[in-house]
Image (cartoon, rainbow, N blue to C red):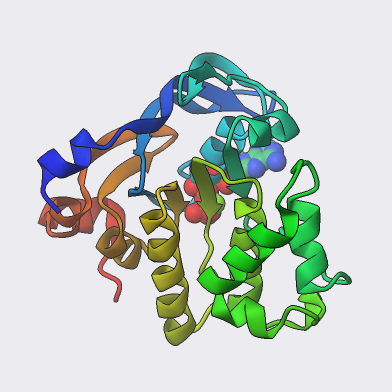
Length: 245
Ligand SMILES: Nc1ncnc2c1ncn2[C@@H]1O[C@H](COP(=O)(O)OP(=O)(O)OP(=O)(O)O)[C@@H](O)[C@H]1O
Ligand SMILES: [Mg+2]
């Protein structure tokens, strides 16, 4: 995709100079990024760079001390997570993102609990989008494979028709074949018009699937650009991305 096509897509999430942490020194400082409709934006950077912290700050899990988070035209800075969901932002944390004792269908129902109508229809739509879940509707989430559970967590996040979805390491711990299947699903979700912001350990793979990438180092923006350019930038690979498969 050309850079022009990317920049023509509307911005659905605009993070402007956000500083946040856990009470002591800030962990992320003055971080800005944009996520566009139907596009995949990857955040990459070394361990401990503050990638997960950034997602937590955007999604209202930790407090932002300065800066702004805009979802569409709404200022959503420091909104509680349950309010952000209503503002069309879904956050899928890396752990504890499904209820293991509930069935797949029950997990999806929980994800859509504030829907006024169309619960069953939405579940049906998501089962079409995630065929693996359709076959497992009546199974307990705890009995699913890692890849299926990750898909369920994404589907739960989609129950309230978000415009933006934040994914923290969705393919962590999956074998390469399951990682491929998961990325296929992420691309499918983006093609339905959702703007996706994904943090991944496997930076090379995430830049392969993303349209835009941000490199975060020591809690600060280092650089950003078309993912394909970052992927082939020798300096970026050596310094921040690493030469992994
Ligand atoms: N709950 C917490 N309380 C205090 N400090 C924390 C907490 N969680 C993370 N940190 C600190 O914030 C910094 C950034 O951590 P974070 O988890 O955001 O990095 P990351 O880029 O997601 O790393 P990784 O690639 O390993 O997942 C680290 O120094 C970490 O020790
Ligand atoms: Mg992390």
